[in-house]
Length: 572
Image 1 (tube, rainbow, N blue to C red):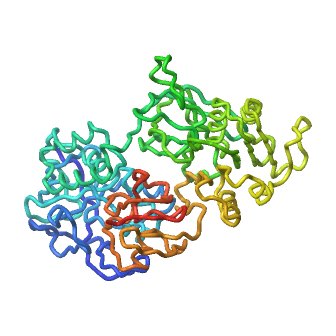
Image 2: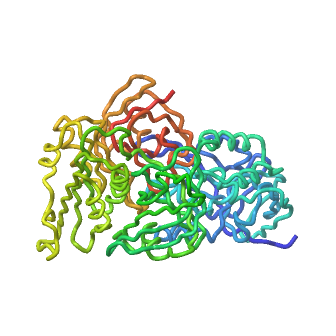
Image 3: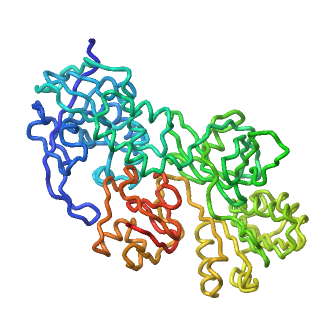
């Protein structure tokens, strides 16, 4: 076969003790670079050390190949140069990459012959040694530019400049990039999973790992994204658009007013990015007389004030999404929903775009002809930034007892046509909450500081915890940390009875458990990819870094979850 590429630089690893996040570690991540040659026997590179054990065995991690072009990609991502060998590879090379090489391909490099086994699945050490945000290993895997491990078929020697030739390839085997999606992606499609697991070169231990990961993902029960075409994008105010699309109703229970969908776009490189958006229109009450199996759904998206170098899903939607654009939508989820039986009044507090789930709930109350008192405190910066103003006013006219109080925080002079219930400044939340009936339900949605203030007031007034409902908003910027609206939380480990206080400085729940208890939950990558640390979430809410795909709501990834409320978890 023809020469496909060339070995450029060679590196070997030597184990040494280091400290990572306050924990002593032994690692060979930092390589000795620019060696004149490496010798391979059937167990791997002679003199090369692995700092930690590999579940799939040292033989299947005998040599790590990393494409030279990947450096340029990650330098663009990080906006800085990366020193050679920083990805802990053994061989930096040119030639075919993960999108053309397959599981089981044989590659001759120098006088050695190797067989490709698995893509690199990074752990927390990558973020440490590359000095990146904790979510970078997830970005690394999602990009598909992972590098490839191989085992040795024939011993030999590799030198810089040696040719790299694919000598054997079976099209029945899945691509390395496809295997990476199954090993690290959120919910691989059935056809992709079948293609990978039917690969003749897939060895038994790797097949077992895939099966275990699918079980941990709850793949049989976990929803998958549907491909949709955008019907319309409509400007609602200066920085908010609504986006409409058609999608079949999910089987089982219909969506509820107040729920959200996880909405995804695909960038120029084919990478998918997801963010959660509340529904303002959906088949909340399916019409049995309507035979249309693809009803209209609608979300609202606010433009984010982020640096141009920071990727924002919301801004991408504003700038790139239009009629017939292909997007990806997971089924609705969330517990920010109206109670089944409302015997007293209900109060809403919305901050800016936080009106979106509340708008759907107001429509539902109007549909039910709810005749109890309904109060809406709506806080916006100025009269040019009032999403769905006309909709809210019209809905108020449909409710028997509706009290709308709108606050303009950055506009001293009210518009000439402003109703008498509009005011400049901020609402007196203490006065408002204390004036409500103790049995009333309170819904609040908006920025984290607003929610935290309402929660504090509600708790101080000793109101019913079960009657406070909130929806936390987090930025879609991957540069932000996964801490949303809370600095301290009470953690209960139900399986042991242990209780303690988590503080923001403790970091992830896994770090907190390891530093405050004698428990050592299973954990591997510590970046949200392998799912080894998954535990049961009995009560409460957590936040994840933007690049981590969350598990089902009844589960928690200890390695990267940060409390967004008091928690009760089960490690059994």
